[in-house]
Structure formats: structure tokens, C-alpha cells
Image (cartoon, rainbow, N blue to C red; front, top):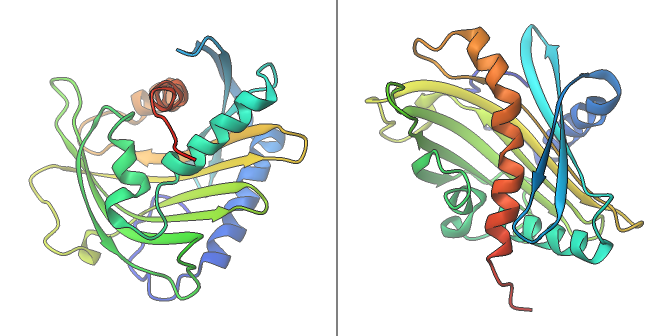
Length: 246
């Protein structure tokens, strides 16, 4: 799992994807180098800490974040988990309400996207979904818009109370009429959210990316920790404004 765009997706299985991603997530806090820690005041009055990490895997630079919620009441943590489960994960059976659809509300650089279904052999309608996504991102001048082609797999486990979202850089040849008038970029990531039996919420994420164009590699590396850390308060503040009907 790296930045090499995948071309053959015919034999992918959810079981294999989850096995590989679980091992990567498990190494973050034990084997990766600690980087900067960020603290955020949320709109609901709570505070969240985000510790970032970095490492090299297969000669590719990776960055990660782990969010800590131990100082927040367990009932609030559970409410956070439910909104992550519902909105960060999105629907596992409706392409109009996927993870990518909800991202537009809290990832402000995401301008537009298109999705195509690509079910895996072992996808389960109520617990997983896989689709191809073409995402257009806009950035402040003078940076040009970027296009990312990805294969996205979302897995929900209501028994273990776990959500996993995996994004692979995908080859544009897998897409129908891929956009060509933007700077091509690559992005691979894993998000893991758990709410354990001790009422503890944990939100981990790791990624490697190539912004493409003329952006220097060193600049991309130093800006990555703050870029991925800010997504935590961005999602939680947006989710705080959403009411869930139960």
C-alpha cells in the first residue's frame, strides 16, 4: 500500500484490505516517530488533542494522526463515535450518501466529485461499500486545482463498534472519461475509528500523498501534519450542528 496507483482491482477483497490496514494502524503509536501535537477547542465546549506521527514505508513518506478524547465524558465520546460512524463513514448502500458526499461539508478544499460503484466479491450491503471516486480539490492562488483518482473502501462493524475507511490511489484508466484539465495528484489513506468496551473513542488516520505539479516535496512534508490534524475539529464542529434522528 503506497502511492503507486492501482490498476488491477478485479481481485481485491475486503478481508485482505482490512488485514493490511489494521497492521499499519497498529504500528503508528509504537513504531512511528512522534511529530507535533495540536490542541483544539471545539464548538461544543470540549477540547481535543491530536498527536501527529511520521515514518517511511517502502521509501514513501507517511504522516499520521491519533486523536485523544480521554478528558471528554464517555457519553459525549459515544455521541462523537455515532456521528463518525454515520457521517464520516457514510452509507454502505447508497452512492448518493457516501463518505465522499459528506466530506464536502467539512473538507472545504473539496470542490466536486464523481463516483462509480465497484463492489468487491465479499462486500456486505449493510456493512461495507467500495467505489471509484474522482475528486477535484481547489486551493488558494496560485496553486492550481488538483484531481485525485481513488478507490475507496468503507467497512462498518457494529459489533466491534469500528469504522475503517481506506482510500487507494487509483489509475485514471479505471475511470470513465477521467478529468484531464487539472493537475493530477495521488492520495492513499486509512482512517480507523473505534469505541471500545471501556467507552473509549479512538480516531486514527494515516496517509501518503503526492500533490503533483510544482509543489516541492519538502513543502508537502512539512505542511502535512497541520493539514491532517485540522480535519478533526473541522469534522467534529460540523457534526455538532447535525441532528441525528433515532
